[in-house]
Length: 331
Image (cartoon, rainbow, N blue to C red; front, side, top):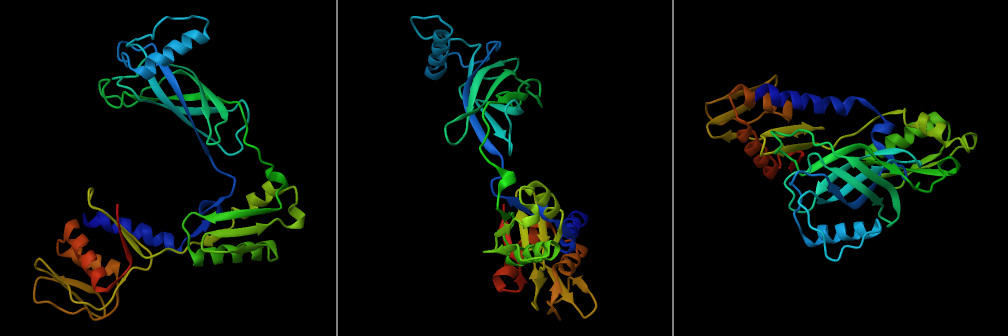
């Protein structure tokens, strides 16, 4: 546990002082994936389908009517399953482009293995059809045919039929959004862009939003501008935070996490930090002599065999006492 936790802490601390590309810390308004969804039928199952049900039976009847048949009653079959089909339309997706699709059973089918998805229209949030999916399913990661057999994928199983409108090359301005809102980072991004472009083209309206006016020499050449700007490097600031997953016993700390002067005693574990180093002990309760980093505290506690549960309890108590300068988040 000692080496595992310290490794996570070092990685988090490293990120604070390394420069990130702007493309890795921001997203551009209008440049995003769009979720698509549709309802379809998977056929060709070996008796592992829905075996009835109003939705599946009605869908089968309507399908036969579309093919020119007119069944008197609803059709029932254990070789058919009703499914939800999902995909993601990439930014600037073009007609004819192939998309991967995911198929999930919505009835009581026990397995979709060996099935084939019938032609299924995929709609966007506006209700329009943007792609059409079909083809044989791939059920991966099975454990003797039982694990997650009610979902599968079709690589390149959908074809884009409609494009999302957008004239990116003629934009007069761009809006950048920080993936992790922070005033310091936003100010650094603005400063970096303006210094490199040689003018006041970028401005921040809050901790998330940065507006960029297209310079005159990049008019109708926005793609080239974005390619240049997204490779500028910025030191991304980081909030002092400790993230704890009690289920797995994982603790990740990052940012300027420090511990103020405080006395610590937990289930026989004592702590003393002098002017040179942090030391754990099992003797009497001692007072911390100076402001210390979390790394020093963890080293001392790990040295005397503190468990993950001990660390979690100590961090929570330090936070409540006001001695720990960091947010604590449980996931």
